[in-house]
Image 1: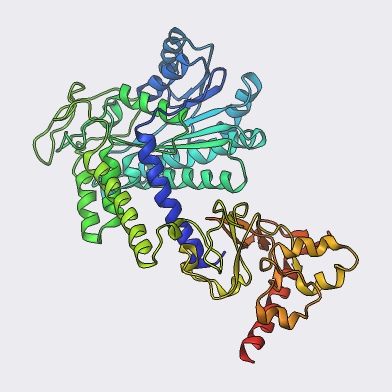
Image 2: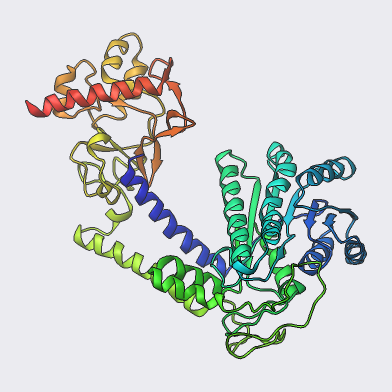
Length: 531
C-alpha cells in the first residue's frame, strides 16, 4: 500500500481504537470462561502470586504453582484448594535456570497437561544504586526478571501455537515504562520484559494465532515484601498498591483479554506525558517515579518470597505509609479525570477536522462516502449506484494522494462498483479472449464506464477516452475504496497477502508478472499523456 495511504490508515485506526476504548470504558466487558484451564503461576509462594492463585482457584482452574520456596507453595496450595481449585500441583523451580525450567516444564506436561494460561510473576529487586550493586546481583536481576520469561515462553508457547489457544501474562512494572532513580538494574530488566512480551504478542498476530492472547501488567509499587522501604510522595496520584486490588485487576485483565494493564490509572497519563513531551519534560515525568524508592544501605535482594523488614527512612518528602482505606479526595472515581478529558478533547478535535474538510469541499457526506467521476455517491439509494457501494479507480497509480480518501476526486476516471477485482487481467488480454467466451468481457466491463459496451474498441482509444482501466489487479476495499496491497512478506512481494492468483482466464499468475504489467501500462499512459 502507498506509504501516505498506509500512514493515514494508521492514524484513522488509532483514532478509532481510542474512541472504541473510550466507549468500552463505560460498557461491561465480556469475560471468557477459564474453567478447567491449566494455569501456571511463577513466584506463587507469596505476595500477588499467591493472591492470583486464589483468584484463579475460585474460577475452577487447574493450578500449577512454581517457586523456590516450597513451604510458601504448600501454603498457597492449601489456600487455593479452600478457594475452590479443582486440582493444585506445585513444583520447586528456579526460573532463572534454563535447564531446570525445561526439566520441570516437561514434568508438568506429563503430569498435568498443556498450560493454557502462563503467568510470569517471579521477580526480584536489589534495591541498590547502580554503582553500589554487585555484579552478581545485577546478573541475577536480569536472569529472574527477563531471561526467565524467555525460557518459560520457549517451554510452553509451542503448544499454545499448535492449538491456537492460550494466554501469556507478563507481570512487569511501571518501572518497565519509566526509569526510576535507584532502580537502574530493575528498570532495565522490566523494560526488557515489557518489550519482549509485546513483541511476542505481535509475532502471534503475524502468524495468525489470534487465539494466543497477551496481557502485560505494569503496576506501581505494591505493598509486599519486595518493596519494603518504598515511600510515595504523592499518595493521591501514585498510591502504594494493595496486593489484593492488584491481583483482582490482573485476573479481570486476563478474563477480558486486556493487552496492557497499568496501575494506578494515573500511570496511563504519566506515560503519555513522558512519551509525548520534550526531553526535559520527559525527565520531569520520570522524576514523579524516580524519588520513590529509598533503599537502606544494607539492602539485599528482595523477592516475592521474602519476609518483610523495617522500612528505612524516606529520603525525599514526608513519608506516607500504606493505607488500604485511602481512596483519594474523590470516592468511587473510576477514571483519571485528566485522562478522560484528553480523550474527550481528541474526539472533539477529530470531529472538528472532519467538519472543516466537509465545509471546504461543499458536502459533508463526501468526507465519509466516495463519489464517482459524475459526482454520484456510491451506494446511494434511488440511483444507478444503489448496489455499488465501493469506489474503483481506473488508474490507481495516478491517485496516490491522501486526498482521494476524502474524495477530492482523482484526476483519472473513478466509478462505483459492487465489488473489488479479485483477479489480474489486462484490457489487451480481454480483447483476445472475449470472442471465445463472453464471460471475459462481462467480468471486465463492470470496472468500465457505465454504459460502455464495445470490447473491440482499440486500446489506444480506450486509454484516451478512459473508457476502461488498462488493467485490473486483486484489490481489497478500504474505507469503501478498492486499493491494491503491494507488500513484502517473508522476502516475497504480495498483493492482498497473496503471491499467486488467477487471471481472467482462470490461469495462475504471479505478482512478479503483475508488477511487469503495471510498469508497461504506466509507460503506455505516460506516452499517451505526452501526445
